[in-house]
Every structure is written in C-alpha cells, then in structure tokens.
Length: 405
View 1 (cartoon, helix red, strand yellow):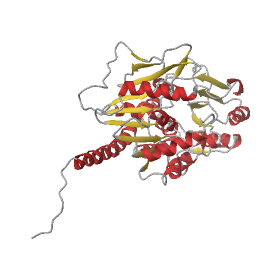
View 2 (tube, rainbow, N blue to C red):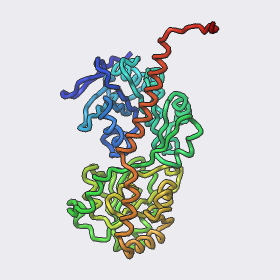
View 3 (cartoon, rainbow, N blue to C red):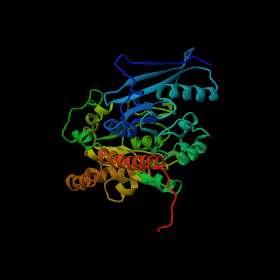
View 4 (cartoon, helix red, strand yellow):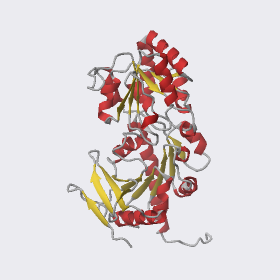
C-alpha cells in the first residue's frame, strides 16, 4: 500500500475530531472552488454560517507524489481538500486512494452530526461505505450528457438516488426529468446575488482590457466549452462588424484554436467574480449563445438573473430554463440564429429601458441565494430531526401491550 499523509496550510486547524457538536458538511464536487464562482460557491459559503464545511475536490496527479490530502481555507469559511496522487495509477487504485485519504481525514463513522453533499455521483464510488446522518444530492447539471462523461455515471447516480435523503435540482427542466426517481426532489433554479451584480447599474469604470473596445458591446461571461454555439458567435460578428462581442471566461474541453477570430470578437479570458460588475457595466446587451445540444438540454444558466440584476438586457438561444420563465415574461429575448440576434438587439436598442427594468426587478425580488439556502437548510433540518427522532425512539424500552382491565 502507498504511504499517505494529510498536509495543511499554516493557518488551518483540523476540526474533524472536535468534541463540539457543530455539524460537519462534506461536499464532494467535480468543480473546483477557485475555478468559476457559481452555484456551489454561493450555497456552501452560506452553509458555512451553520456548519463546518469541507469541500473535497477531484484529485490532482503529480509525478512520484506520495498520496496526501492538501487542505486550505477560503475567506468564506470553507475548507478545501484536494487529494494529491501519483501519476500512472489504475482507475481502481485512484478510487481506493481517494477513499482512504477521505476516511483518514473525516473518519469512517460520524462522531458528530454529518451531512454529505454531492455534486457528482462519481464520488459515491469512494464514499458509499462512509457514515453520514443526512445525504443531499444537489443535481445542478445533467453531467451524463457532458463531453467526456464517464460510462459509470448513470449507474452511480442510481445508487446515489437510493442513498440520499434529499435531491435538489438546478432548474425546472431537470426537476421534471428527475422528480419520479426519488421521494423528495425539490427544484431550486439559479438564483441571484442582487447586491453584487446591481453595482453594474451605477458603476461605469471600464476595466483596462475593455476600455478601448468600441460600443455597442454584446457580452458573455462563463465557461467557454461545448455548450457554446461558436458558429452563432461568428455569424453575429460577421452580420454586424461594427458591434463588439466581449467574451469572458476560461476555455475548457474545446480547442481554443476553434474559436472564431475576428476584429470585433474579444476573448478576454477568465475574470474574478468580484470583477464581473465592472465588465457588465460597460455592456449594452448580455449575449447567451448556447448551443442546443445534449449538454444544454437541462441547464439553468446562473448568468441569466445575474445579467438582469446588472440591468443588462439579454438575448439567449432557446434554452428551456431561460424560455421559462424569462422569455415567457418578456424579460429576455430569445433568438434562433444570427439574423434573429441582430433583430432582437435592434429591438432592445429602440425600446424604453425603464418599463423593462421595473418588470425585471419585480421578478428578481422573489428570489435570492439567501432564500434558496434558507429553504434548503430547512429541508435538511427536517431530515436531521427525523433521524434524531428515529434514534431516540429506538433507544426507548419496548413494552408489550396488555388488555385493559
């Protein structure tokens, strides 16, 4: 067996054998905390007010590394654990090493109330025998339809449905697809940090790499991968060479050389979450050129309400969870091709902004990440209460019923 260890930053204190009864929430994620700020970060940073939150990421492989867990802490109070494994391990050994490192870190049995929170069913392969009091599956995407998805994913998801107490879905279309697979499925579509993005309405300081880009600007931010219709981006740029397309985000799973290159398309790379309002404040239209393919069939883009909170009108392709409710309510314009994008943009340029913005704010007032987390937390507490009641009842003496005299 390979020798294993746990390393930590100098400021980190392992709390996992603590005698206090603050519940431990362990999240198993396919997304890295420092990649793009999205649903997991919004929810777990709020969870940290109630739980000790530990996020376990997918492993990193290094030549001749001794298996160990690197642990660090983020300002939001969330601890991040990354398994470091040597290159060249078989898939079975990768599973075994992750299991043993996680078990060494948190223990096999729950010494205090413990919640397991899954973003990927793949993590069940190395955690299924570890004990937890509440099991949550926050099903934010249909990962089985993404490029490079494991063949084992669907089988592991079936096992996860069998184990978990609660299933949360990242949108209504995903809820409709999953609601008959578990007794307790709840839809929590993408929500909004309104205070953060609404800064764009009043702040008009262009970032250095955007200030020289002419107007009008159509902007996108997010991960640039197989879910983007790059042909549509190219078509719009060609139809309106005097319009500028500002594209922000990391490029993953596709060849950067495949991205269209024109003078009016600006690929600015990834930006910090804190920087986004500065960029959005200089955009005339938010552009969501999602391809209509298997990978986008169930997505609920977080950026939809974020654009709206920034006061930026939006044009999107016909993603189901954008059409419902944003397109149906006239909050977002829906376009099928480059010509329709141009047509919808010209409509936006000509309409009065204030009536639209009033309607936007009325819609956004109904939701927030704080409200989403509060509802999720209540559901978790209810399950925890049921578990506690069940344990208490099982410890009571059992008396045989006797006929009344």
